[in-house]
Each structure stands twice: as C-alpha cells, then as structure tokens.
Image 1 (cartoon, rainbow, N blue to C red):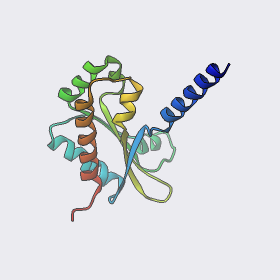
Image 2 (cartoon, rainbow, N blue to C red; image 1 turned 120 degrees about the vertical axis):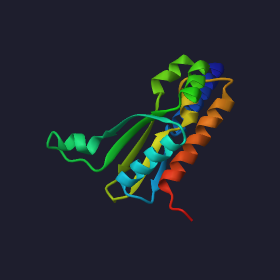
Image 3 (cartoon, rainbow, N blue to C red; image 1 turned 60 degrees about the vertical axis):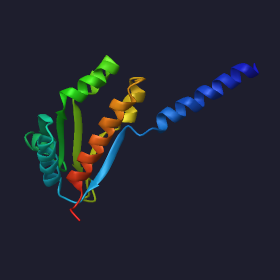
Length: 152
C-alpha cells in the first residue's frame, strides 16, 4: 500500500514538473509587430536560414471581415541543423520547420515567441543530442534578441 502511494506521489511530482516547463519562449520587442517580423525575416535570411512562409493572420482575418490584432507567423529553418534534430528522433519532424510568432497584445506590446527547444527535447524524449539542442537554443535566442532589441 505504501509502495503504491509512493509510486503515485513520484508520478504526480514528475508530471507536475513536465507541465511546469514552458513550451514557448517569449521576448518583448521594442518595435512594432510589422517591423519586428520584417527584422526577424531579414536577420534569418542573412544568417542563411530558409523562410518557408510568412503568414499574416491579421490580413487573413480582414479577408473574412473579422478583426485581429497584428499576428504573424514566420516558418523558417536550416536543413543542416533541422535534419540533425530529426536524426535524434524522427518524431521531432512534426515540430519542424521552426516557427516564430510575432504578435501585439491588448496593451499594444509586441512579442516574439518560439518553441522552447527544451520543451521539444522533453516532448520527443530526445536523448544524447545535447550539442544539437544547445545549438538550436543558442541560435533561436540570438535571432530573437537581434530582431527585438534596440541597438545600444
């Protein structure tokens, strides 16, 4: 009986920890939503990434007579690093290519969000690929800061 309770408690703690890991990383931008999206797209292209799509949800909403605050998704990737992640666990391909969400909230603050690589590592039970995961995390951090920060 005590063994079953202990096992249940360990399972509960482990699942709580899993839920505590943030699935998105969000950075506030010092630019408008459009300028942030333009900056991000330009930076990733300059760094050799491929832009597969840029989806303007606000524009699409207007096309069906609905309103939406600025909301864009940029789908991008680098086949060299993306393939390495897929080689770690083929199921990771469902989350690739990478996506960045640029959005404006009700307080007119602009945010750039992307999937937390640690969340993807956990989601797909990726083991033994820490070097690849670190490279992805560093690249996403660098790109998002470059697109959202004012020069010093």
